[in-house]
Length: 326
Ligand code: TRP
Ligand code: SF4
Image (cartoon, rainbow, N blue to C red; front, side):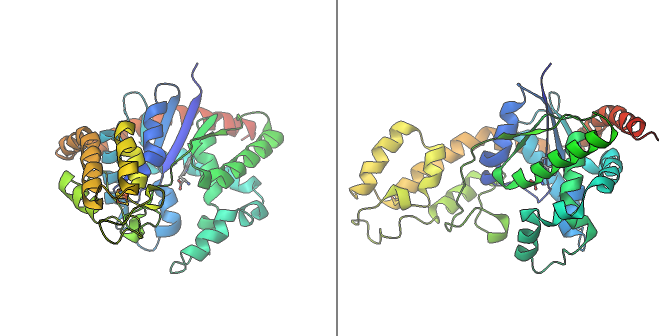
């Protein structure tokens, strides 16, 4: 039997290439090796977006279109929406009874997020309980592996602690899930800061080839290369962090000395990059175009996946209630 994997993403809208190379590409890859459950964490979005929920619905649609167009296969993996499986909420409630508040308060992401999102009032019960809901998401399917980035490790640690506590109190119901870490290249955006929707420096999976080329040509390079004749250094060039992902090695072996010797201009160099990116992304983008034209597609996928998820969650919750002697 394959080990079970559960992972979720908060719906923040269309995904950029940083999401792809950081998370989605890995999800796609592991579909053959694990029994995979991938879900839209829409209740988690509510922890920060509760005051204005208008964008969530569209964000879900854009995100799931990206997922499937770029290779998530709803036939092989269970692709579902958290809020369509109410057991997440029931298990969250039960886990919240056994989770000490101090575990949540000391979680480093808690203070960090509150400080970063100063414009939002995050002093809510639900936001403090973010890791409890996440624990429920994972153990509801008795997952043993959780593909996450480093930023989610503190949350996963809380999941493991809650799992141990549950098993200690009520008997051995849940396996203790472990991280399935991927070394993720930290993608830089057009301006050299981390690629992020809120910075407006992203290249989206759904961008056209023309938009991509335009963005790449506007990307920062080695700031020391003021004139075409100035030698450059790919190691400090923002654009080059994308070259490393998209441009074949033999081409890089030409570009690096050409940059250092000032025999290639940045415009030409970035055109090579844009060409490679568009070539690699084209088939996925075409698939996305095809999916966009079917208005029911996303709702159907999520309804079907959520029904399949419920088959499992239903029986696990029966075990939970019995362990609690309810
Ligand atoms: N907290 C995760 C993030 O922001 C999303 C998430 C919610 C998740 N529930 C999960 C990830 C369960 C893995 C497993 O990226
Ligand atoms: Fe960057 Fe290429 Fe310009 Fe060198 S030539 S600074 S690698 S864009």
